[in-house]
Length: 226
Image (cartoon, rainbow, N blue to C red; front, side):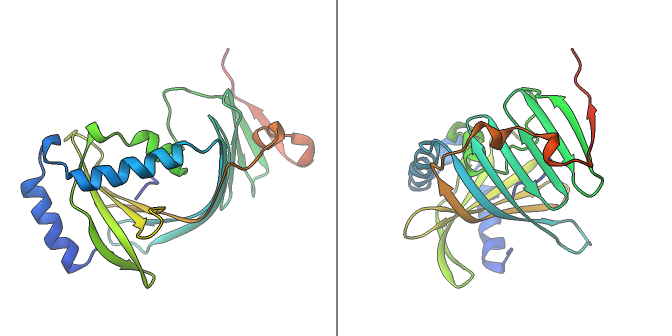
């Protein structure tokens, strides 16, 4: 679940080589790209809550791409995530992991050091993004699904990072986040595309708790450790 963040073309390949050679320190970050990213970050982090539909594409070397669709509701540190056969709910203190087809729910305490769902939400990714940790390359104008977009490449300052590069795709008119693509050092690629995002939606506490009575045939395993 951790490794779920994010069309390599000849043009980008040329750009990537240039980035490797020229962007090696935080002082090399492009001011224009940094300004655009900060503006987008401030916008998303101003939302009190978000509901998002997304598509996750996982590409592993020499394997067919795996495509998963999901939805997430998030408010503060609480979330309700559904993706394929997984349904994960957290109220910030407890985490319910529901394996739908197996009719099994496991309950755990939330580990504050565990960020398994870090990249599922645009808000969470933007909390993860800090300009001092990434070197932003100059903006590239490209096309995705027939629409003009901005690409901003981010290179982690930490050379031991699991990912050697991220690509942020932004709507060229509204500056909205379209997708995040992560390039792993093991050759894997993870693309999280935001299909629809609704900000500042009102949720009840029930949204962020698992009620076993709603699933009468489910088995519950309480794995909490006091």
